[in-house]
Image 1 (tube, rainbow, N blue to C red):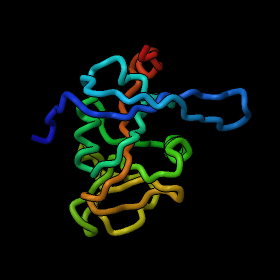
Image 2: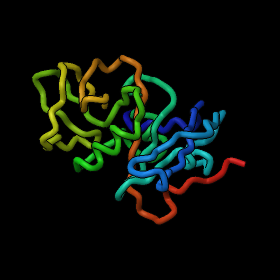
Image 3: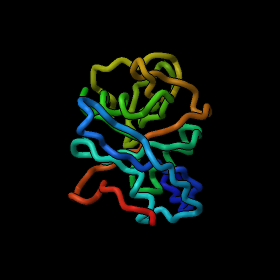
Image 4: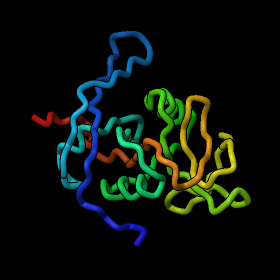
Length: 171
């Protein structure tokens, strides 16, 4: 079914350091750690999450289609990224680097309404370009493509606890 939890993934996880001292938006990506066969609730996987506002975000290193990407996020008790504000959208655009990343918006066809992964309608004022069924972030904003094309992806989940997004050393 839709919520199939695949327990094991070959995931490239990027650990991140936030450089506050270097003026402005210093987000640098360091120490790529390849985790072979880690279970979905492993502490190691938490090292790939970054906190922003009230959410935790996971930026993939892999590229897959939209459906796989959503299944991957679900296995981490998350979903493809959702944003509520311009600040969140700008953070995701800034942080993702040069690659396109899938986010949690899809529609049945170009004539249908955009919806988030929980089926709520997309009602914010940020335009989505293109005629595809699935949305992704690029450097210019939000665009759309066919479901089966491979891209990186972003997962998000609520940051309920102080330590939820904190990085843990894999060593």
